[in-house]
Amino acid sequence: MTTELDDASAPEIRSNTPGSFPYGVLRERHPALIQRVRNAFPYGPEQHRALDALLRESTDPAGVMEPLPAEAGEGDREQWERWGSGEHVGRSWFDAPFLWAESYFYRRLLDAVGYFGPGPWQGVDPFRPFKQAELESPEAHAELATLDRLAKEPQETQARALLHGSLWGNRADLGFQLTRTPAGTTSSALLADDSDHLWSLLPPGAGNTVHLVADNAGRELVPDLLLIDHLLRHAHAARVILHVKPHPYYVSDATPTDVLDALNHLKQARGEAGETGTRLWQATATGHLSLRTHPFACAPLPYASMPDDLRADFATATLTILKGDLNYRRLVGDRAWPATTPFPTPTSYFPSPPAALRTLKSDVIVGLDEKTEHTLTTTEGPTWRTTGEHAVIQVRHTNP
Ligand SMILES: O=P(O)(O)OC[C@@]1(O)O[C@H](CO)[C@@H](O)[C@@H]1O
Image (cartoon, rainbow, N blue to C red; front, top):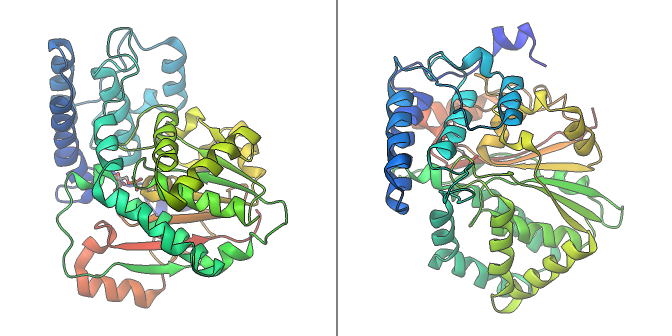
């Protein structure tokens, strides 16, 4: 789905420029993450050796991507071949597309800690302690308590608050927190706000199907579930399909276990939050809310390359809500687009109207007006793209 035009006007982002955001992710964020994972589990010498090797290999600008280990199943290898391992393995981590290198890093990290087994660490999510701590944080409990007050507000106010809760929940991303400096003087701001379009696509009682492609677990997934409950309860959606990752990925990305944790967290809460948890639990039993774990959710590729079965699934949606930074990169393509590129241009291939709810945590951005881009660049320098202080709600409201 990549055209020569894309390559010329919007080259793919790579990590080979010292001082750039992607270079920092490979050189600083990944080593910090490996250290956190080591500290969180009593891994044995085998896992520590594998982590050492991955650290050396992936942070050395002269290092090359090693292949998946021999234990990786035939199916998995074939899948990674389809996703481009033949082209990138054996070459520099820094010269590969940033999206590809990052995704492969997570796949290799899971291997290093024995996630794919066999062995005692098989299936043990190396990021689970961080996700759980976040769910149990005072902030997470305080957020739930505000629901009792919100329930007394008019429905429109509730809808707006829950949409914004889901959007800004994306700031609570554990990977991002590894190297984020405390918020400065800049105030958080929505740089594009198509929320009226979003609601206009979901008239109540129209039997709408909403797909929500989740991002992080914990303090992002909980507000996502609250938004889903609102959509179902007020008939903006007759049915919601929640897409999560089939296995751990990008530190805090949500898996089915995380959905279960979040639902239990809600169900066990008092007041409105508890009632929401019970309703969502019932919605799964009746099929009004269902889960998807397509393998492509962990692919190192943009959605423009999605397989036919996933394309057919998304095509059933009245609206597909894509959460977070990584989904944004995959939706528009991880490319140095001019920031003023209209949002419908790089998303024209998507088989249903897409809505991106994203806080800005990487360089990619489209759909801004010239004045906004100019003001941000002159007042904040290039970091406005990556601090997570800004956000967008962008909707392409037409079918392809
Ligand atoms: O998708 P999310 O959770 O919003 O963000 C993922 C993220 O933290 O990971 C990448 C760097 O590691 C960046 O693209 C982005 O900031």
